[in-house]
Image 1 (tube, rainbow, N blue to C red):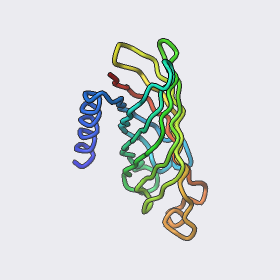
Image 2: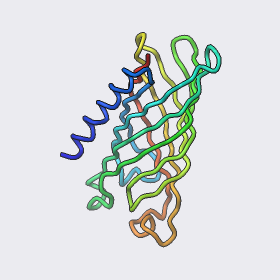
Image 3: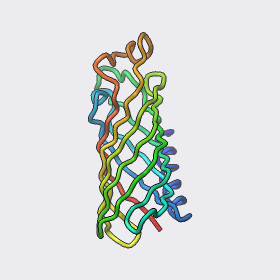
Image 4: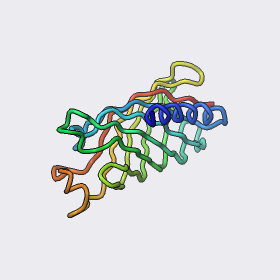
Amino acid sequence: MKKTVFIILLGFITIYASAQGIDSELNLGFTTGDLKDELGLEVNTKVAYLWEVTPRYSLGPLVGLSWIFSKEESGGAILDDSFGYTISAANRYDLSDFFIGADLGYGGVSAGGGSSGFYYRPVIGFMIGERYTIVASYASLNLDKKEGGTWTQIGFDKGNTLETFQIGVRLSN
């Protein structure tokens, strides 16, 4: 029930933000990093306010919220489903019908007692209408290693980077 309510909430945040003149995204992600055996599908929304620095370059703050589902088949679900967040600077360079960009900042997850660290996300988008863009990105969250703490206790000796490939839709005004 909590998963359903959270996903509906992410949808409403995305729709509301786009109606206010702010760029917003709704993405689906697949875990590919060190935690791919424990964590699986990710649903996230991102909201940014971008200022046009030059006619083709935009810069501004971006905030993201995500829900990351655990993999039940990973030996009894070491982790529960996780909540994540990111706070970053968004850079976008428009090239006619598509854009390239990068987000750099800070993020965290609730998995394993919680951890946070450096976040980066290269992104590319292809416009499919006046307000809609298909977005593809690769996000990486380098989590703080907790020596003797929860990460080591639950078997994360192999690494501490949460990486996801994401695809979604961006709404902009």
